[in-house]
Length: 408
Image (cartoon, rainbow, N blue to C red; front, side, top):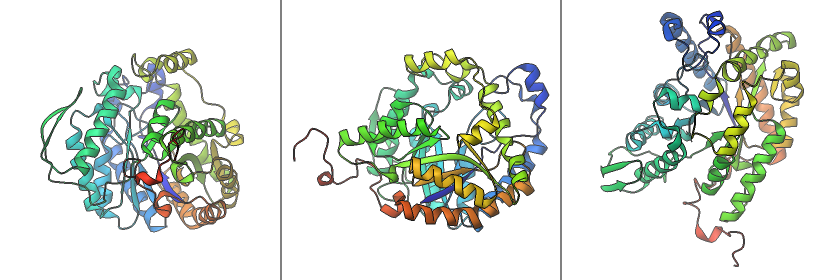
């Protein structure tokens, strides 16, 4: 298994009452409530926590980015990855991920990611996302072209990594007179690409058609099984059998020495859910053109959906909190049913303080993750690194592919 540590890096030092009075805490909630001194403290505490995560044995540090909201302080994922590339020695740096559609220069992005891979000596996993609806508003991107720009930027970026220049690119959204960037990644043919998401089946199919692992972001077990069905069918159509090495899962999981203390921290995930789902206007989350017509109708009909109660989420395993023995028992149930070989533990968020965050990381690294690795071996959940799977369908030997409906 590949076991990662994750936090949204919340800017929890802000006047929450002001956001509730305004009605929303993203996109148009004024940045006059941002406190630079508190932000500096939080950035440095997060850095200390990431370094400690490597020290206690986690396999990967998962990073993401969002904009115009206090629930996530990562304004540019590549900046924090660059810092960690220089300060860590062993841990994988997993970017989930760079929002491709908001980039006006995928070649520049290819250079930035290449630098991180080189500085880290080949420890980078480069994930890509479409970006949430609010990101389209925050970056002045046209949501109607979101998917087209995602796919074209991906194609251009991967070609820049793998095909020596100089060459020219004339696409619908990107035109490059000369592609010949001097910096390319250390890993060949290119760093592994993983695709995270919540519910877009178009993205699930796209990931399967490229043989990229799909990381389900805290979806319910039922929704996760539906995702794997769609993924597996798409994989069979293009010629391979998908397995645990293509499956990743992010789970909210807070652990402390006592059950009471663990639930104190676990309830902070509700703060995050109130931020992300309760205080974001649905029109910002799904601006016109961003989603397919059916997905947009479904989302708008929900009208500011509220997260289920904490106790209900414990019952359905969307949140796990407890002592190391308690969380291992519940995570085993999740692994047996969802069968991911890539597991991200979303451990500290909301108002969990630095001291408690460090203790949670210690318990994860020293007690929870060793047990999960043993369970992973029992269940045959070998990660892409352990299975040494091809990085993509394009780099899978042709003789290994047997598309559905094609005779041998």
